Length: 88
Image 1 (cartoon, rainbow, N blue to C red):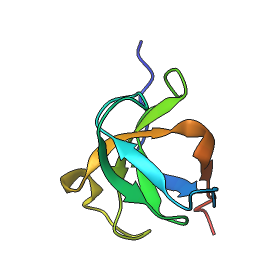
Image 2 (cartoon, helix red, strand yellow):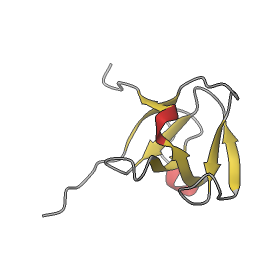
Image 3 (cartoon, helix red, strand yellow):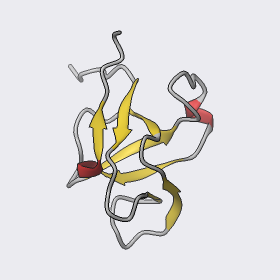
């Protein structure tokens, strides 16, 4: 049976050299940039694992944003995001 993945707002950007992470329209650096995410930006991911180094995400306004599905969505390079423990 297919594994169900509960969406969880547990992803945060690492500070990176350019100080932004491109949200792209498809999983490739050749794809158009939708917007630039700042370090510390929270995103919602529903992919259980990256696909060829890319992960589909929804951009969150803040950590408590329960309407992220209505906001911008696209693909980010997986190596620039890190998980945040939300159980505290």
